[in-house]
Image 1: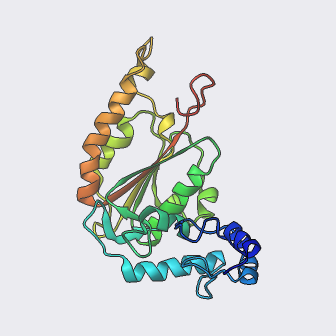
Image 2: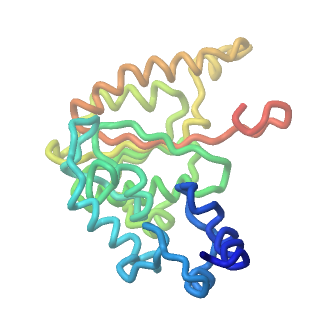
Length: 254
């Protein structure tokens, strides 16, 4: 029979009595378990095949995804994926459906966050990825903050893109429905940085502006309903950035 002191120490390490089954990982260290003769359970023992570095984890996940992922019918064109410039972000977006991950064509993507968090950087990186694959880029910059030198840091050639500074919501969405890029067999990108800077015709031309404040939301809703079908049919990738409004009374998502 096992001595009482040894049994008490064993129960303290295991976290449960021998008759109980606890599926959670055990908190004891490997050295303590070896000293008390506690056997490792499945998933607890250190595996020599498990990579510890970040690059090793990425390579392991890519190899595992290539063996197990089955591409299912879904929105977007998975044959040509656009990278975000970050392997981990690519895998987080579509790593469960495509081995290499990335953003497929034919969808609308919104990148939102507070000012200065890197939304323009991400849009520039994705736009550069579209150009590197031979696609055309239409870049809307209502705020006028992008320049050629900044875009070149991420492989985005602003001089080769259709660059404009729209003022209203229709100026962004209406040209998309009639846009004819040079290459129809590739993913062509449309970028807007940012939607928060867009106004409406009523707000800009009317004397009192939009008193109700609802016209802008209605125009966005109507434009998205009309444009989403064009994006899927023509395999356009539209990426828009949007800022979070900082409201002391209602919180950051007001």
